[in-house]
Amino acid sequence: MGKNVGSVDKILRIVAGAVLIGLSLAGIIGLWGWIGVVPLVTGLMGWCPAYSLLGIKTCPVSDKE
Image 1: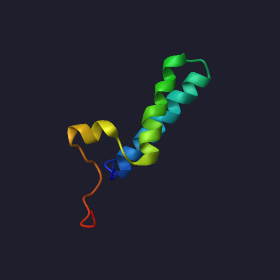
Image 2: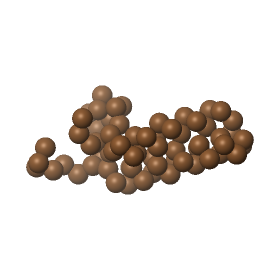
Image 3: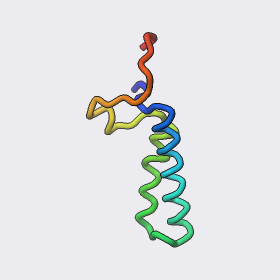
């Protein structure tokens, strides 16, 4: 399970996830805002299962892998 989420992608995921969760906690968008947990966790881990299935990688390729 190597990293497949690049730094810009990671930041966008974390911000989007936190915003969705925050809006949900504030009662603005309702319970569906908790879906923000998914991008938040994938951003923090640096690995996205959907990217693995689709063969997508937004992080730079290193020779160490």
